[in-house]
Length: 203
Image 1 (cartoon, rainbow, N blue to C red):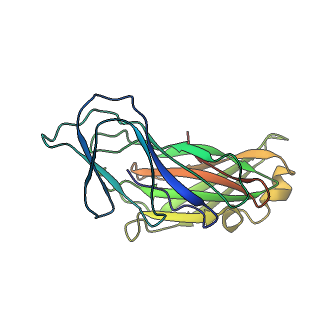
Image 2 (image 1 turned 180 degrees about the vertical axis):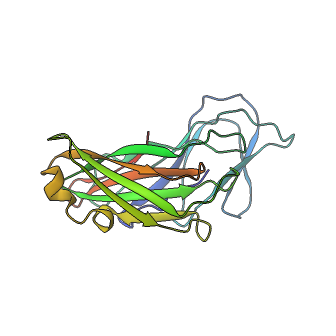
Image 3 (image 1 turned 30 degrees about the vertical axis):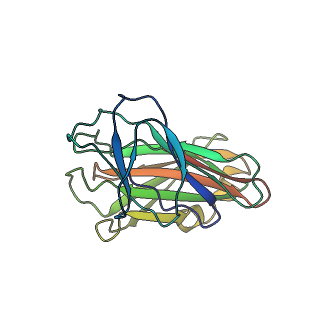
């Protein structure tokens, strides 16, 4: 399980493991720290420095799906966000395209991960497109990133589309991403300094 490179504004980060998978005794490891055991769902505070969480069993058997997520909030946020993440394995679905919501009124982050367990063609070129609901105009930008050097990056939306606020006209829109590498996953985060932030996985 790869945790996205989250905005610095996030506090009180938690790992959520939902109690809806085969009942067994499991081991979980945060980065390369000592393994901890569990046998049912839980919510656990984790350090923001954690990038990877690994699940094990003593007999090497794991269910095809363990439902996980992260939760957290910023300083002035009353209701924390919660984002489903899931776990990845060598048989995980391959994906080259995704889309997620962004806001024309707030600060937005685009969070990109590479799943190293998935054997895939390496591609540094990312194609971003920004859509609004006012018309059929689309902004497009190509940028290069080497995710073999780091499995996680975080971008402010204005680094990709400097005029996104005027394009979205203070309303919501969508950002899409395409990359030939089928091991890429991405998320968006919308941040308001008074109300807090969200983290959402792409579809």
